[in-house]
Image 1 (spheres, rainbow over the protein chains, first blue to last red):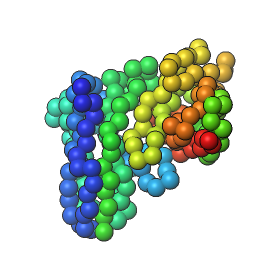
Image 2: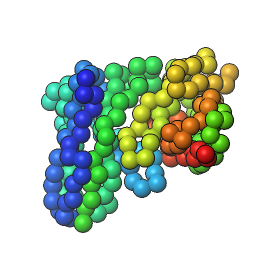
Image 3: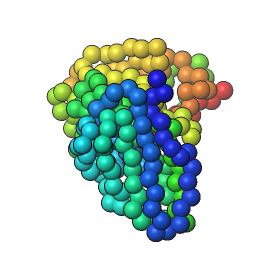
Image 4: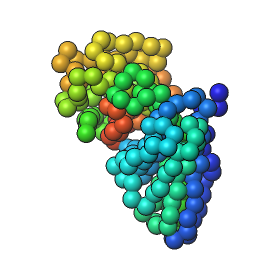
Length: 116
Length: 104
């Protein structure tokens, strides 16, 4: 199993540009999520999905869109990049998300995004 | 939302045990306590989880208070490779974690 993969590893954007961060998992996990991590900070939840066709907002959803057309893929779209979105983005997946034993999350390696 | 509180940083000497505390006074009855760690420039990785009883695995031990309002991650013999930020989380809320420094 490849686990959770993310592309690209690094990206530089100009203010106002749009782009999509890719995330894929091959563990047949129902739950997937996106976090951002600013320097010296913990992870903050952006959006999550409990299964194909179902998404919901996390703590910091503004400026980001997501969709989940398949179990494997969960892309994160930046509609109009802003310098405040400079961060490291992590995608994660888990079997469930109900505060249960099977909530153990597997994280991707991250995408380091800089918005100029 | 479930919230955890951890010290910002701790230090340990190599080969000595480390006890990393976490308070989670708002935990609900069925929430599992998960611990992750994040090595420099990597994504978080799973360490251990538990519900009520103490738990052991090859990486660490988890001691959970009887009232479940706190827990302690125990690294039995810290190594330089254990230097990381350790997060105690309930569901999906990450705090700022504890940065563990291991001294040679």
